[in-house]
Amino acid sequence: MGLGAVQEPDWLEWDSRAPLQIAERQRLLAERRAEVLADTPGSEAACAELRDVLAGHLEAHRPGWKRPDWDADEHPLASVCPWAVEDFCLMKPGPEGAVLIAAILCFPSRWRLADKIGKPMIAIHVPVPGYKEALGKPVDRFLASIKAGRLASRFNWSIMDDATLFQPKGHGLAGHNAAITAANAGEMLWLRVERQTFRLLPESGVVAFGIGMHVTPLAQVVEIAGEAGKLASAVRGLPPEMERYKSLLPYRAALLDYLDGKALSLA
Image 1 (cartoon, rainbow, N blue to C red):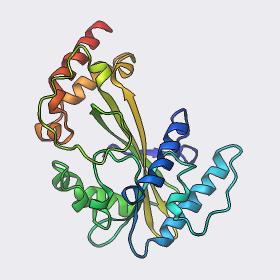
Image 2 (image 1 turned 60 degrees about the vertical axis):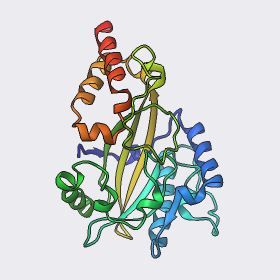
Image 3 (image 1 turned 45 degrees about the horizontal axis):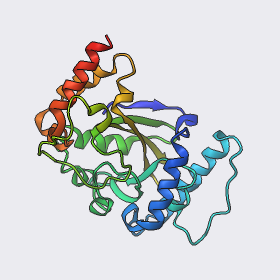
Image 4 (image 1 turned 30 degrees about the horizontal axis):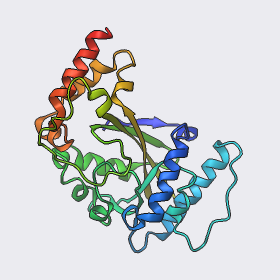
């Protein structure tokens, strides 16, 4: 799973992405609310707990931040949209594994909240190659064992031909994309990285799964020494079924030609 520990001050990110991402989150919530916000009966207390835990964190770690008077008529997960760039999925451990009971998901990486809400992790990850066999039980054990105050994180990556933050569709694309070549891949492709965090909400026993999104033009990524070679190795290390799942096949050859060329020229 590639997990690492997270200190309390580092739970939430707030950087140069924030103004644009917060504006986009609020636009999506206003215009496509049913696609980005969902809950299940009985999740109300956990949603309110996340809002209050987040507010307590911001009071302690974001200088000048003051807790607002929450709108009693607004959903607690919608209330956090102006203050956090992260999406949050609330996972409740249970006999069938952790179940997605509520979420604010403005920046999905090719999955639809409506398809996943109310389902356990195994069912949520059916499209992911090898998840059930290799990760299903370890992930459920991890989510059931998280202790209060012990935060964790991991990273997930993909390379996409679209920088749009809200991407509910697009897994499994295989047709060749002739528009992307080794000459223009740096401008036509983006590295999309999810910073995923895990935090137990002690009163409800629910795990808050946070997803912070970083989208960077490939041309900018390869300017960092060694990154072109590392990324090429990571792509080549993917099993064929994972390449298909990540929709790399339409431009895999052009991508690798571009990365290999940059690795040589910047060596």
